[in-house]
Amino acid sequence: MPKEVEPKDTSRAAAYELWMKAPNPMVTFFKTLDVTNLIRAGRKRHLKFNMLMDYCIGRAAVTIKEFYILPVGDKLIQYDTPVMTGIYPKSAWLSALPRS
Image (cartoon, rainbow, N blue to C red):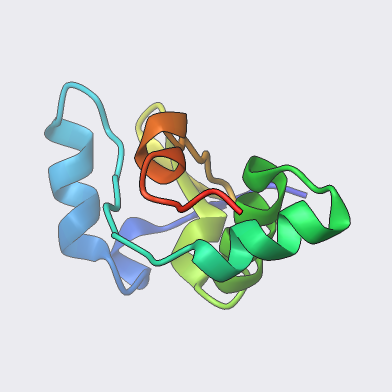
């Protein structure tokens, strides 16, 4: 059940102040990862890369409490589940892999 959180009581009070003044309040992470083993496991088990990547990110995100908080209007709302979106360009991982 979503509940309102007081921004000054969070560990990200300063970031909240910057978010709310931004035209698009969003946090974006960029990380370069070697996903070769993930792709090989997906090919072996006939699983899609995006599904496996979402699973890995979700497993990591459930341990980080900031992924449960989302700005809505002028308030911070804390959810029971992580709030995130993943975007993976196909060309970024497909062109880097050797074909087997």
